[in-house]
Image 1 (tube, one colour):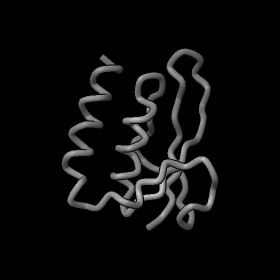
Image 2: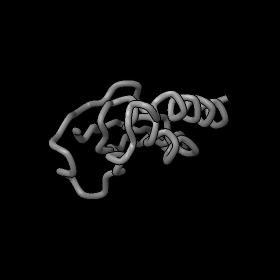
Image 3: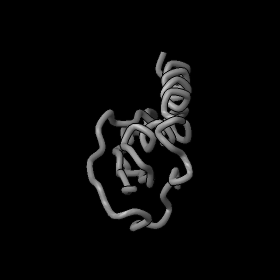
Image 4: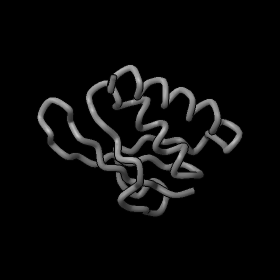
Length: 86
């Protein structure tokens, strides 16, 4: 379990921000971040930093999700990104 940090870019202002999620894989972390922020932000494809789990407050906690959840999460994240970036 690690905390993955991703850059997100506000579509309206262009401002770059950072968001973190603790998960068993970077794909799970990114998918959860997309589900939370895709309506207003573009989420980077690759993480920009890795920390020990739960290191920075304010993260999305994905620690209960497993690799078996990955296909569903990726499908939902792809659908969500398509809704807001079309």
